[in-house]
Image (cartoon, rainbow, N blue to C red):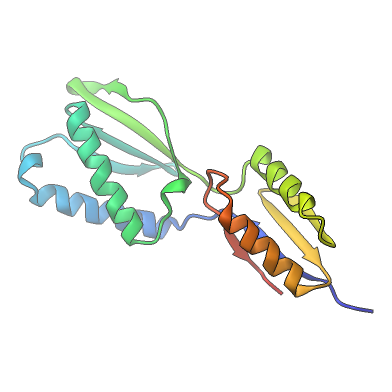
Length: 163
């Protein structure tokens, strides 16, 4: 009896890397001329990033610095979900950025549907916040991984536990 091969499609963001990027952003802000004496702030609060600055321009610049640090640390920008800008205390503007952990149910269903469209002899099942794909042929699994890498689902995806 042949053993099934499988892999998991997951979406994980390393909070250690996010914290390192926040610290690097704070350091750069303290050294930049356009942020001298500014009330610009970056913080991680309950798995959400909170950025705030005096106005929209500084908030945008702060976000650009943060994004560049996240990319350098290997954190995908697809894992960030931006909420609306809102006024905050002291005449500042604040924006909350949610960090995605796990694949949302709707996206998981879309991924399973796309795998089934390929008509390969594999099974795809949603397991909590991940999708497990299993089949007898490793070549089929490799083909699925290549297909999913080409398609953009708007989320950060990794392929884990390939065996």
